[in-house]
Length: 398
Image (tube, rainbow, N blue to C red):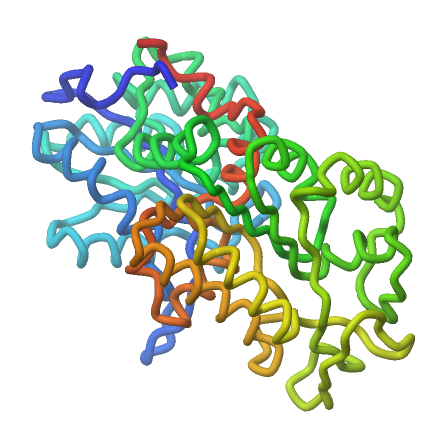
């Protein structure tokens, strides 16, 4: 992407509005207060934040959290995130209970250079998701320049990801965005072959464009998760009570015909009556009985997929192979995580993205063995598809 970066601007003495992705899982501390449950995305923003602070800029952080529906929700406040960020950078992080307005501007103007403030959840304002011009301009009024470092939200044309850039003289890529673009461009535009793409999850509709694009470049496209049953049904297999997107059967059939030489589908399945921990499970090959549903890939599929992955020079993975949140249906996803880590150890370039896939990596202890763990799910798929990402398109051209 031929966009300006932090290296192209001088932040000293400047008010720098940084769109970060602090949409993190929350938990409850021992004393009953809200706290951050997983700080992976917060840590990912630290290189950009440190650059601005170390070079004498005022860092004004904005992010969304959850889906508050355009109005304040105390359960989705970013206040506890500000506290957690302060422990990571070992500096005071101010927090504003407002996102825009004169009060916020006064606080920012009174801050010293090299200090940081986190503003309240952008989605507390209905103008955020609507990409409202008034809200976008109010955000722009807070700062002298804009940095987008929220790759996970870059596929959304919201006020804080795209609209605000229209009112800024300078809008640049952050460090995380640079790293994401570099890694994903290597997969999409210039992969070393064999390229193996692994796609799972529940909905084939979420990944149609990505499958179509990857089928043109990948040597193997390994399909798992509930989305595989939509493909298997159109091929004439009985899939029992497995989840199928009935309104996508025709599209799935057309796509399979186009990519038949590339796509691999599960040949055996872990099945049960329901995706519950106490459900009795078994392994079936081929067709699935009508009263059972496929909830994970079986051992034969695991072995076949692992062999393909270990032969890869480039691997990209998005989406679990089954209902991995339930232990007895997690073996396939865990095995894929280990295979991707093993092939990376052998020199392959690996990219893993999407919340469930990253969670599986973390659970299996393999996350630190992957070349690039992406903070994006939908943004990753959109990028690989070759579609524009509004949060990047809106930035200043180099």
